[in-house]
Image (cartoon, rainbow, N blue to C red; front, side, top):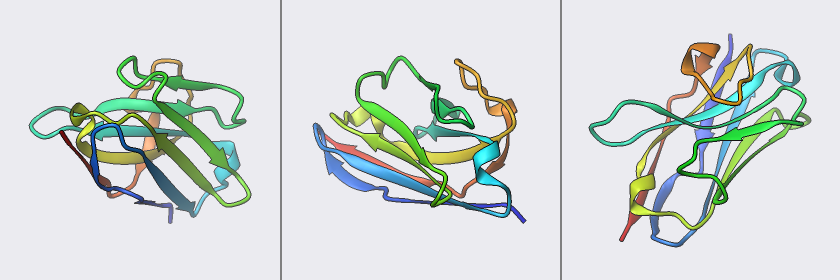
Length: 124
């Protein structure tokens, strides 16, 4: 059974930083693309970042480029999202996902396993 467990969310002031982690189990982690998505309050889920199975390619939503960095540690079966210069509009539930296809424009349809989400709140 595949499990994805996010951690690292919380409350932070604007301009601050957080690092989200997603620990994976139940499938060969290194073979799969990993992505981060978020759902702001009252809005649809949206892509944030993705990383290819090999780790050599990454993709970001325009709204987070230059501020967020996705990375993976295959030895630890973990994917990270380093979030810097946080803004109130980054407030959302953040989900990690594991999927079979990496795309430069991440699409939730390409991901078949999802974590339970972690809340990130950025105060102004």
